[in-house]
Image (cartoon, rainbow, N blue to C red):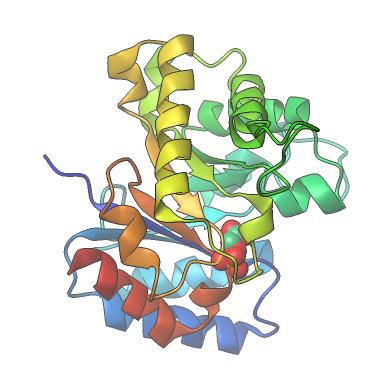
Length: 269
Ligand code: PGA
């Protein structure tokens, strides 16, 4: 069976009011409702998750269930189950809200909150323990780097191979079916400089190669691989129509309901 295209809307620290968040969700929901081939995962800030899930339950009883068209995700979580960790939210709390996904290791977390690969690994473990699906973000900082002789230094594969292997320490092959890996080159995030579909495909193939090395080929095929970084309605289709990319992680463009709906249109045309 063909997989649905997975569209993850990462709202980051937006919008500022609950009213705007409800309006954004409602508009997206109405615009995507009739499309069959996408699964949309809305990842609002923590504070809007609970009210949005509640209103969504009444709005779309049928859709906010595993395997259905809409799901909710959290942008992060802490690695402990509960305890004296001021301001933190555990994966078990997120699970309790009826969320299904948690983003782990987004480059903004790594950059502004000094999140390391070891921390990302602890989060991935606890996300899976809570029976949620981790969306692990990996990506290189700079576009192409060359050595003094002008040879490419393979920045992408070096960085993402290392990040992925560390993020998956202690994760068994039976858990890989729940794994989502988002290739998000940092230079492409929020810059308007999206990665070429060919390069994204190369990265996606590389992700499968690493997973095959860590597990085996059939296990590697069970993971879902996404691309993220300046995705918009003009470039979205080129990623998912090319082999290897099964969905998109959308930041800025997910805050504009009509643009996000257009992305869903383009990838399912
Ligand atoms: P962007 O963000 O679509 O605004 O580039 C993507 C992301 O950070 O996940």
